[in-house]
Length: 75
Image (cartoon, rainbow, N blue to C red; front, side, top):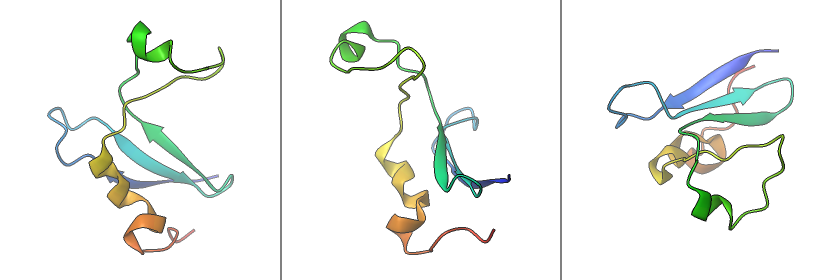
């Protein structure tokens, strides 16, 4: 398995996140971002205990190959 970093938020003040990855074994994306802890927002969703919710800025969509026309990363 290899994770491919597709892009890091160019506007992140700390440069640490959010980040978009592609997993070539599962053919899925992994998203790194700030964990949502606001109880009001979480109460409006049905999130199982084994899952979490992260903030993901709209500007990060540019890194998905389906959006930018770049196709999947070379694997």
